[in-house]
Image (cartoon, one colour):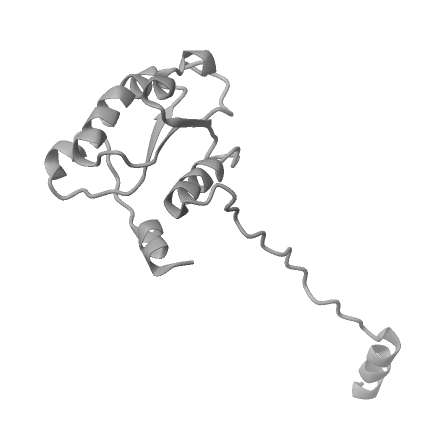
Amino acid sequence: MSEELKKKIRGNQKIGQSMVQEASGSIHGQRAIMMFDVTARLTFKNVATWHRDLCRVCENIPTVLCGNKVDVRNRQVKAKQVTFHRKKNIQYYEISAKSNHNYKKPFLYLLRKLAGDPNLNFAEQPALVPPEVRIDVVAQQQQVIMQN
C-alpha cells in the first residue's frame, strides 16, 4: 500500500450538525461517511443539509450515506423513502453498528475509490486457534503420587 493511500486512510474528521459552520476553513477531507438513524426521522431530514455543507468545504470527494440501526423494529425511515443518494450520485448502505450488518461495505467502497482499484478487498484474517495441548494423564498421576 502506498504512503499516499495510508495517509488518506488515516485522516479522520467528523462533520455533523454545526461543526461545518465552525470549522469550514479547516476541513480538507478526502472521503466522507454520512450516517443517519433509521429510527429517528429527524436525522434523515438533516442529510441534505449535511451534504450541502460537506460539498461547500470538500468538493467532489467519495461519499457514502449509511442508514444505521436497520436491526431495530421501530424503523421510522423505510428503505424506499431513502432516495437522496440517487439524486446526488452517492453510494448508500443500510447498516447496523450493533449487529455488524454491512458494516464493512462503506469502508470498502471508500477504500476502492481512494485506491482507484475496484477489485480491492480486505485481507481475510486467519482464524486463530489455540495450540493443541496434549496431557499425559498417567505421567501426571505418577507425579502427584511421587509428591505425596
